[in-house]
Image (cartoon, rainbow, N blue to C red; front, side):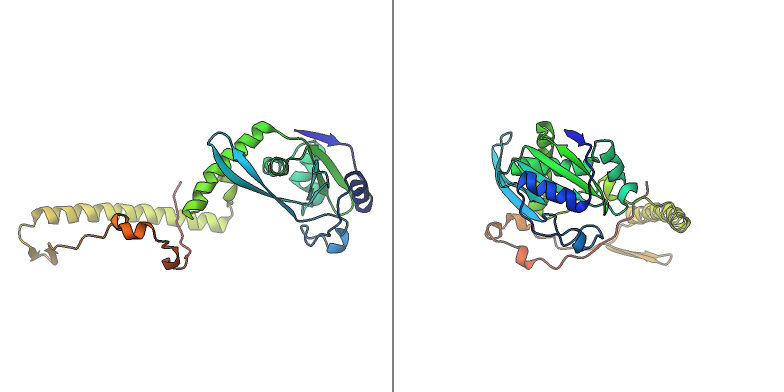
Length: 260
């Protein structure tokens, strides 16, 4: 829930106004999308909050975390500052002018309100000289969505596995170099799949024709042999109570290529 304040001011004026209204401590800002520290020294930054939140739906007690750029001493208002690299040409700035926030920013601010228990979030979008302020109020339905998504994400944390990529995680490419390489790969993969199917069929025919433990002819040899079974470690009681993570090897990067 966002209300658009027709509020534009210089950095010094807006920060002074915010401090006067909300009594925010001035802590300084070390980074803000390319703007120097001297232009951000009046902005509270990096205030981290955690609270114990109860998930009533599942009866679990979880900890929710958020990082704030500022919060009032009374805890009724929080501050989020955005300095888009493209300034007024950015999607964020144009959305703010229309009184809205892109979905990922809106969800971020709602989580801040949920965790901090604040009544209002002041979202200040700054282009280096002027800014737009939006007032965002709590959206309880959005909070339920955030909690449910966090429940899903928590399972990946517990299993120490990465969640599947979403649409927003994928960078789309349409340049000639990429397109040419992709075309060659697709054609080669289809040819390789055809060869693999042919190979599997031929292997199956040879195995079906084999009657002895080892038979040879026509340039190939088919040998039947026994291989030891693998150990089912889940059935070893002594290991179930032991933390095996210290024995895990270092992570390694792997690459997967899928054809759409």
